[in-house]
Length: 70
Image (cartoon, rainbow, N blue to C red; front, top):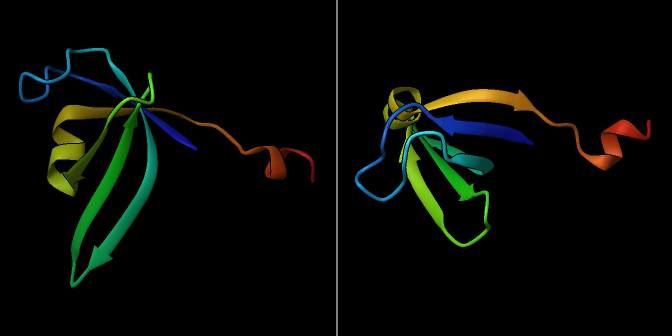
């Protein structure tokens, strides 16, 4: 699971440094969209590829339990 952190405030909703988990991504005719879940699991936000690179930085990629046990 990928973990992202905000580089700067996001639309007056979240402050710099907030952590998010990438829970889904999709691509349709070259347009990428990502769904991020806040660390407190309260809200989800949809962001474009451009917003992801502008506002977020990848912290690490956590491996799931299934991948670790192999």
